[in-house]
Image 1: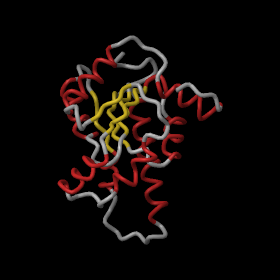
Image 2: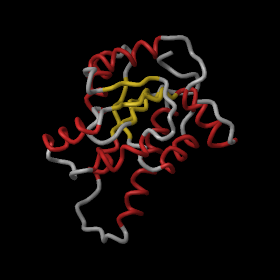
Image 3: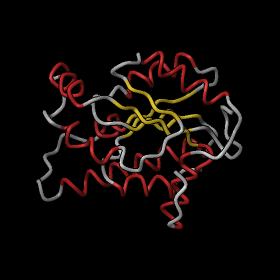
Image 4: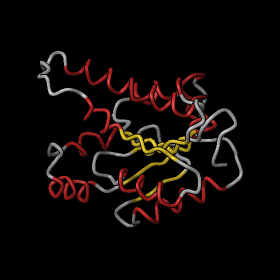
Amino acid sequence: MEQGATGGRIVFLNGTSSAGKTSIARELLRVLEQPYFHMPVDAFHAMRSSVTVSPEDLPEVLRRTWMGFHRAVAGMAASGNNVVMDHVLSEEWRLVDCLGLLVAKDVVLVGVHCPLPELELRERTRGDRPRGLAARQLHQVHAHGCYDVECDTSVQSPAECALRIKEFLAGPPGPTAFEALRSRYHTSSYGC
């Protein structure tokens, strides 16, 4: 199940800032037997020039960045590349945009969970995230409530999470969470 019929597989890691998505992605690149590209949204934000953007213009700049990220991932997968996508679905439009762009049967949606006290500790330890960012994201990130695989990084190591995802990828193909979500968001029927 590593390679999708129409293109590359997408392992879509969704969780708040500091939940452990990047650590899991690194482990996935180490344990998966097919070539994968790690495409974190943070890398796309880091590519933007350091020109000061006014507070009024910032939401639109960020929206265009997220939309470009989604299209870059879709393009890589459409070209037959396997991708580990590191994402934060903290706004519903991001999920809807991805549902319209990505081949649903080729997406493995992974919920990366972590309790708020641990997220706050990680934010303080990291020092490179605005304080309270994860808390602001937590409510919406998992609001869609439908995953193929779920991990709790407060009790599972990144390696354990990666192995769990690898096991899922090796299983028989079947309807994916992304297929159920596409049906829900595009036809108002509920699968999850």
